[in-house]
Image (cartoon, rainbow, N blue to C red):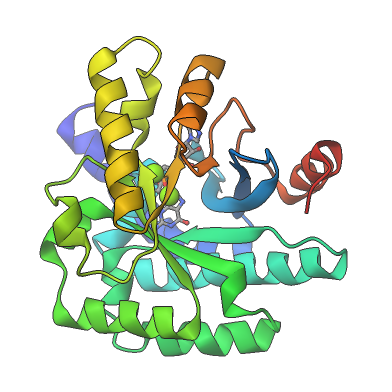
Length: 266
Ligand code: C2E
Ligand code: MG
Ligand code: MG
């Protein structure tokens, strides 16, 4: 794509996003199951956004989330994600299901001084408990985290929301630096998991991350697990939770229900 066309596409996507958020039904959330290594049972699911644009077709979050983050749209977009996920959790609880739903947020959201308050009001409105959700955000953005973002994270933690650091290992921050944050879960980046079966270097690295993270009191999730070799290695290193195509792809709610029935859990 030439620069002009890429620019035109970004311009159109940004222009159409507000419509997609308010009325068109083009945005949806999929849920990717996360299972406990020890028991094999489903402990939760990660909510992942999808946008089917009326003329441009499927747009992935790797494209539209950064566009939203570059504008004020990240605020209503995250609001839509939270509202949709909470309403799904409320529906699931009516049928006796209770997967903990992990929701991706942008550090830009943490810079809103009322983010935690807004979330608390939404939890009340949907009659969903704070411990039914987890908030995840990437480590790379923490390089620029502000006092205000830390305040919001502290408030979320006090509410009982669990906090996870996503894509761990790709950023600049070491574990000791992360200790300043009230997170209890580390998600190891997929890039280290993908090559686990063939790379001794990545094996040492991932094993080291898991053991250090445990020493510091974190639960560890491995994401992007695509083969049994990686799954078995991670299990033998006491990794806590597993996510990846080997277990399940991101699923629409009805498919998630079928998957939960078939796997015999929550
Ligand atoms: P992420 O939070 O690290 O999510 C995991 C991504 O890996 C998802 O891509 C998921 O579909 C994909 N994945 C899961 N298992 C496997 C596997 O075994 N192999 C491979 N190759 N990929 C796997 P997706 O849905 O395209 O999302 C990409 C990124 O976009 C997410 O990475 C997250 O950073 C962001 N994102 C997605 N939805 C949202 C959202 O609602 N809000 C925000 N702020 N960010 C979002
Ligand atoms: Mg994530
Ligand atoms: Mg990730």
